[in-house]
Length: 503
Image 1: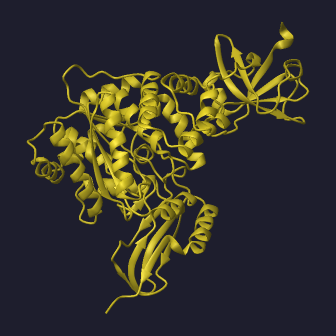
Image 2: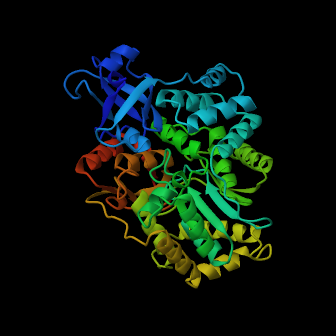
């Protein structure tokens, strides 16, 4: 009946990708359905439907005949202004019983993992329910069996790429926690230039100032659909795309959005995230970089070994050959921290510029060398020489440009409107750089949401600095964010430590 309809209007409200619907508390639909704020509502328009969280409006923001949609809800429903829609209570999410069980110490079963991931992928979980799931995984570490169950479920709800029987498909991943560690684009260029196939799909930042997708987005288009991503790989042997746009393990990007808001990145969910995307992308051989350091995500060799075991075992259970590399996580890698600043670093390495970050170059070559050997592009022991030749000759830079052109053309990374250089308060030796606090500082300056924001590092561990010597430069797109970051810096002296020189 007509009285059950409301017309849709676009409110232009950013709700951090959560679909939200807004209704007046005294509209006929709200009253007749008994809707309450934060309830879950199914919206039907034509043959399309979504589930959204309800926010109640008091006052005159909306008329009695209209329902407002957030940007996320509007785009997901593919709505049109003035279109009529019906509303009803969303079905109960039965899989939440498994989440509650996990919070009380009960392990996820295979069925439970399947039901949870299927419901998350279908958009049935509110952000509050997603937060409960993320917290359950973080508060009570997932066992290997639970991790395998969740990984399989995440693969099953997405699309899969098949590259043909017997074909070696290589990939790499870094577990994160190390600012400026933007080796992936360099590695893809070196590996693809040697005839191997590396379909690299990357996440956006979770708890860091930039992910590979964020950095590459300042250089080229990363929102490739499934078919376009495949075309780029078929043409050039590699790609550098955002995994969320390709719908490989789509539940992962939903979970990552909430992990970012909570600043949580649990070990088991991390493993499931990495392996599910590699399986979905059709990879056969995967190298995983695990930086280890007192202020990295992985703080000890013991934790690194446990994570390495989970990654290799979960990969093996799903048919992947996985190798891990434990690397130095004591300090940031490149000069830049933040999407555009890290993009400039990787371009400098690919172009063999003398002033490029030698640490970023060294790490990228080490990773590329292992992948070249895993992919049988050279004999065991010959990977480093081949990687060095490929980079030094300019072949890697040519391949990178070709991939970017195929993805939509190369762009110049943006430059921040505001900068402030922070100076050494005394003479001494740089004895400690806190990765976590440095990452937080870059985030407060605006990264990754403001692509040009972040930090340029001017010192490394062991450097001798004089009073007034530049330590780092803050970059911000808004003066308010710059001031906010400066306040944080001055109130957190543990960001770095300068010791007196020993005679």
